[in-house]
Amino acid sequence: MSEPNHGELPELDRLRDALRASRQTIGRLRDRVERLERTVDLVSDDPQMKWLYRNREERMDAFVPIFAPLRAAFHLARYEFAARYSPGKVAADIACGTGYGCRVLAERGRAASVTGIDVSREAIEYACSRHAADNVRYQVADAADTGLDATSVELVTSFETIEHLADDVALIDEFHRILVAGGLLICSTPNGWPLEIARHHVREYDRQSFVEMLERRFVIEEMFSQNSGSDFRYNYGQPAGIIPTTRENEATAECFIAVARRRPSSPDSASA
Image 1: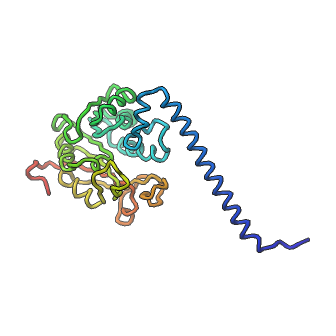
Image 2: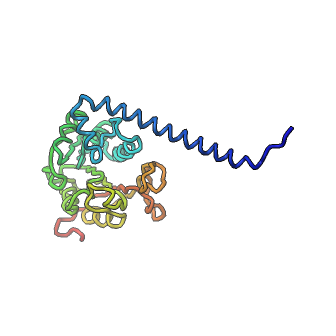
């Protein structure tokens, strides 16, 4: 009986690794083909779905299977996180987009009511059509000039908004204006994504600059790091999830989520 040729074992290991990688690639391609097939079926005869697909870089509906699953889950997870704070609250989702987050706050979060605000009329029309509920209303307005009554809201959510607006100070002032005394803001922003990879952004924040902006009007009670678990460079190889931010992990956060309480100060006495 011949002895095994140990010199061949490294080559066998390389072949096994190549086979494993090929199977993973085939699996990813199969998933992509299936998603494209669903997209074609959804978009073919539906004008709103055509609008959503054309604007998919800027718009999201996490309940529609035309987006990469990890990306959709990343967006949905923020609202599921915020839903822990919304039971019984009068809430407003500022820059609500397609409205799926308002639905999460209303249904899973059991909010007393939710108002969705977005500057895009098409987005609000989509939200009214796809994510209507008895305790949810939508209106077209600028995030920094919502038209909501002063001190009329107990909870404000606004995810991935502040980095899009030229006047971030006006946005924070508006959150402060519409919230009741002691009202809660849950707000997120990417962690240092460079503008060249995010064509709809006008600025980038790190933890320090995000905190400084919010602290003009709010007391930050908790800060969280969110990661998508995707192969996106700025996920830094982290697993998907939302965890408390620490000095040790802040550099690898894909996004930050702040939970902040409205300061009782007047505009003239707001901190710089």
